[in-house]
Amino acid sequence: QVQFVESGGGLVQPGGSLRLSCVASGFSFSVYTMSWYRQAPGKERELVASINTYGRSTYYSDSVKDRFAISRDNAKKTVYLQMNNLKPEDTAVYYCYNNRADPWGQGTQVIVSS
Image (tube, rainbow, N blue to C red; front, side, top):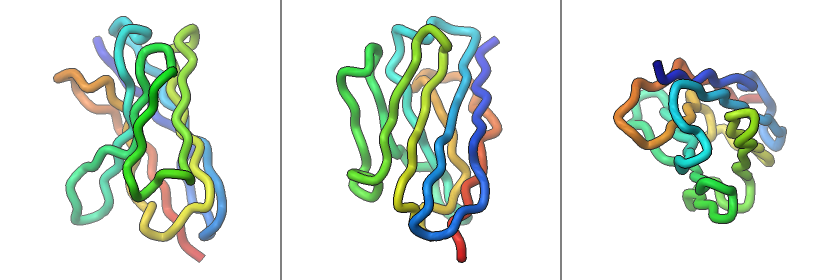
């Protein structure tokens, strides 16, 4: 059974930082590109960042480029998202995903507010 368990969210002031973690199970983690998505209230889920199988290639949406960093540890089946210089518009539920047709996890809530 495929599972994604996201953690590390919380309430942070603008300009602050958070590090999200996602532990995956139930599939061959190391052979899949992993991604972080987010969904803000009233908006569609959007792709934030992706990392290929060995971490040699990454992608970032324009809205988070130069502020967020995605990484992975294949031995721990974990993908991370370091978020710096957070802005109120980063407020959303963040999900990790393997880009297959598997069920999504519960996500982790990030609120950026003063």
